[in-house]
Image (cartoon, rainbow, N blue to C red; front, side):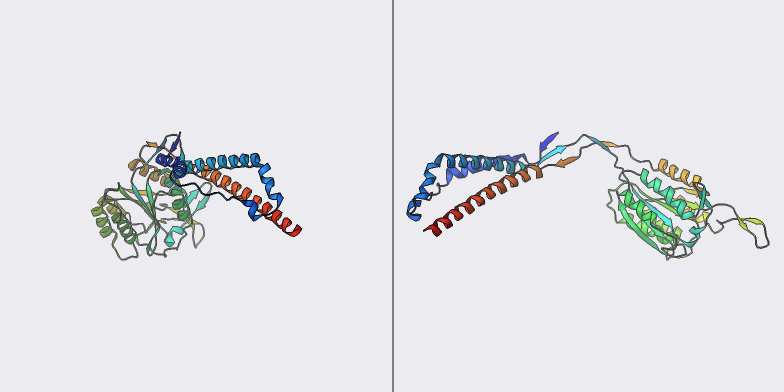
Length: 344
């Protein structure tokens, strides 16, 4: 569907005619014979009909240019078909642990063994792609917590910056309390009318750094309405080579503080999940999708494409063409005058 954003601009169409009627006509140059005392100058009288045709031609070109200019001022636009746009209004923060223990290779991705962070990136990226309509932010934490991406609807940017993160970027230790506090601060800065506030925190250890106790941080989150889902990541057993030969089984997640993570989730109305392999991690993020569902698409949005530059460009081309014709004519007259002067 075609439309005009500013149809009132069409009221300017008769403006040149109004100016012509209200202002006195300009005096034309006459008695050119007195200024150019040669018989050649009277040749223009023979070509009066041609001059009138040229005048008419320039007049109609000017009219078309004016019509195009007014049409451009009215801002023509094309309105597309109605689209379904999901807008949930939810603020969803992701907090990912980058401490040294995330380098433990106890997960499998495809047919190869990978470290915990690599598996987290793969699964969390798919989770981010599904959160259409949510404002998503990214917090990376280790010894300190950093806001890598503020809340945004640009999911691709969040995924890119998550994939670029690496172990040790924020230090070797784990500051769970600082990560929660940073999320609380970002939520507190949002307008009160914003929707649900959710934090998905993933870690493989216990709080070993930072200035804020995780439980105290969870109490602050409860006060501002921030719901926290905690994920403890790490296999329950792993085979390693023994110093005396052979292989033995160890628990690579012995440092995981599940009690504190559970307490954090319960205080804020969330849930604690345990991810022991890639499949369970995928299931956890799908479950979070169910607990925090994406809103159904809302119809009513129509994309609008502005087209004013087409008539505006056409008007400029016509005006430039008229100026070029006038310039060439002036050059031809000057050359003729120079030839006459040399002949005299």
